[in-house]
Length: 184
Image (cartoon, rainbow, N blue to C red; front, side, top):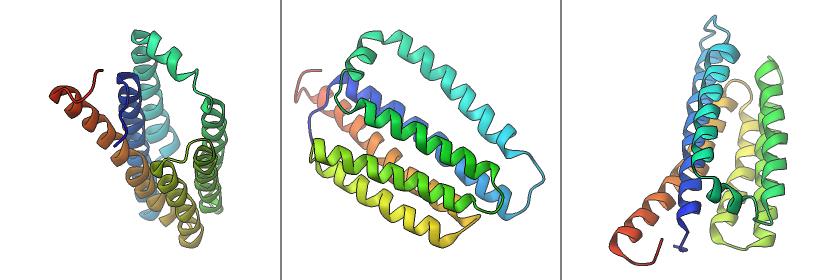
């Protein structure tokens, strides 16, 4: 596994925690739609979760301003931010839409896959290749499954493609740091 800096390890943890939050939200959205639970999930699941996580992330990044500055100096940061915004807009549209939500989720997964293809072009790490392939396959599966199962597929995709690798990288860094394999 590639050696990562302390800033990258913490960033991987933050991304993994956000992925876990979105995994929970998509799973709950699937359950609400599948069992026709009469609640406004956009207000009670999504807004509350994302708002609390945003506040926690802002507080965390303000505590680690130097690390934040290093992350924004990466050449691929513009691609990452743009793909996050566009995929978030497709996801939001999918949450609002009752009938075409799986198409919007499939487009969001496709955008995430294309982002990782772009990252492979810049840096041909095997992790980026796996992520690109995973998100492109997920886009097809989500489009095939339709609504509401597309929410479940998106949830599983986030968990398997973001949460697990992010936590694995974070804990590998901590283990190597503890054993003194390389400096922090």
